[in-house]
Length: 185
Image (cartoon, rainbow, N blue to C red):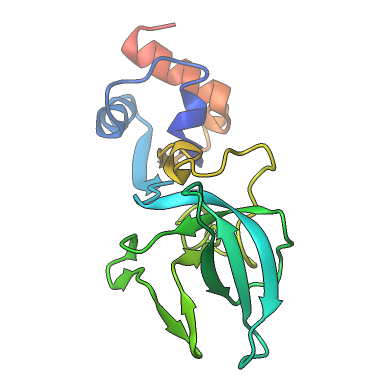
């Protein structure tokens, strides 16, 4: 059973860290077999609005977009995704953003056209395991806002639930167990 600590805290006061919670649960007889940090959105990724999109002159699968990321000057981005439309708001990795151990965003040319950043999918931001195209954000999302403020970090614990504890197959049951073990409401 995988359980999000962000969701669990809606039901019960949690110990100060995921490790402390795992220790409490394990001592109480519910083994924690895994822990995964999610939603660790890197710095230098902001909300941008797509102002225009045109076909790349030298590539069938690329588009050249102008985006507003809140600086007042449009920024040109070469993009391979097709699931967006003009006016959509998307995450934009600015030059200097680090999306992986060997993946640093920089200004450069793609097929002869300057690209000053990269519009991102949920997978590229480690918010999903797979994704088709760009992550389209709600239309009311403010341009220029750091994306890490939209997606708070979370930890997901994987619990080994034994057959005699079906009460631990949901958030309320796990919350009751945590409350009993930590003597909180």
